[in-house]
Length: 136
Image 1 (tube, helix red, strand yellow):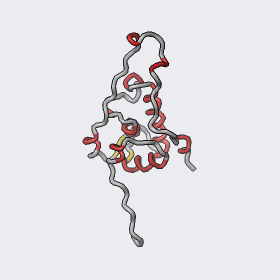
Image 2 (cartoon, one colour; image 1 turned 90 degrees about the vertical axis):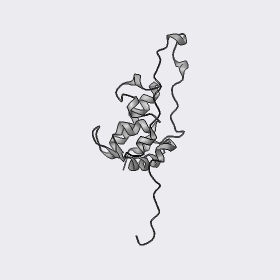
Image 3 (cartoon, one colour; image 1 turned 120 degrees about the vertical axis):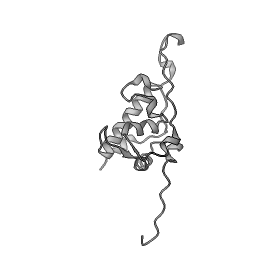
Image 4 (cartoon, one colour; image 1 turned 180 degrees about the horizontal axis):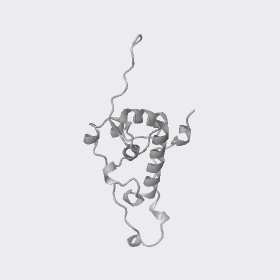
């Protein structure tokens, strides 16, 4: 039995922390970078990726535009936290570490099975499974 049930999301995608949580005038607030959107044309040619990269793609973030270990490179603390949770879930489910790749098609299938809420561009990277004819 899997521990994936704890990852089910009622209303994907995750909503970022509101800006109102900080105090002080806006000019005193540290600015967060705008993470770049994924380069989907590039990702169409890729068959597998490290768990942290798949987690970034699932959030609509180009992996090359963030440092998976640095919260300041993410657009919000919530996005960084969500990224870490998804990365950990991928590693646990696929029994891989940071240095082993997971197939994008397998990731998409698993993410759909737990209602992760993927960007449509990510889902489009793999063709839908064709139904098998009887006897095949």
